[in-house]
Length: 280
Ligand SMILES: C[S@@+](CC[C@H](N)C(=O)[O-])C[C@H]1O[C@@H](n2cnc3c(N)ncnc32)[C@H](O)[C@@H]1O
Image (cartoon, rainbow, N blue to C red; front, side):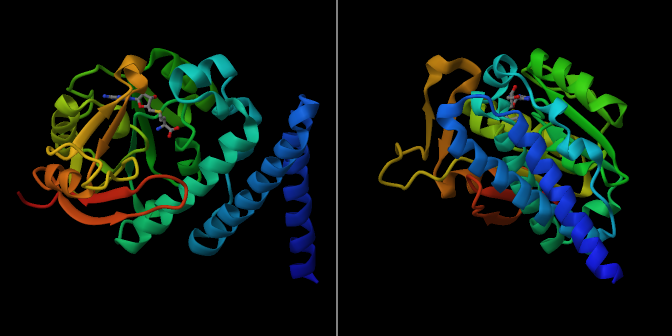
């Protein structure tokens, strides 16, 4: 009986979230596509919700489905891509990616519920940081984009400390500070010359037993890549340029600064490079 009531409550909660997303859909021409993505967001939210409950005995935080954290089109376009102003896309991608991070962290012995300090490097408006809200860790985010930090600080409130940081180090954190640093779609937009400078800085602020996860674009095949193994694309887009690597070249760079645990292909996008500080 208690189980049935719980199932009914969960179904109603999912339906309510779906309804709120649907209510924000205004353009009839794209309504079918958008209805489908609102459904997909609700489905992925259900998966994430079960994960918190079954793995950590935690409930989701209200901010994780609060449509007021979704940036307007102008902010989304300036920070990452216009489609992130679409609430179902903003949430569906976030739920999926959060799960991917949690799975790989658990697999490598870095359970997020035991962490004290977590940094989202290149946090944007905090699209992924909100999924760490249920944990007890102190949350930090930093970004070079002033609009992102202003928007995120307003919507995330005091639970996360966001900082506007510079195009070059240092970051405003003490050495050996974080248990976890993740950089989602950030090193994919940092030019080759600055890649190692930032790896070195992230190594400085990571605890000796900490974990760093950075994402890459899908790897260049050796026959697509220049002989150096890397390629900068769309430089005219400024901060939105793309940095591509062969698998071998990126591995060669990261092992100068970290111990490489795994390069994991993830269904939601490019590979995740999972690292720990290790001895050099
Ligand atoms: C594609 S967006 C991703 C935002 C966020 N990580 C997410 O997944 O929603 C890339 C972000 O990295 C930030 N960024 C790029 N270079 C950076 C740097 N050196 N330090 C901090 N942030 C940086 C950009 O300003 C932008 O907000």
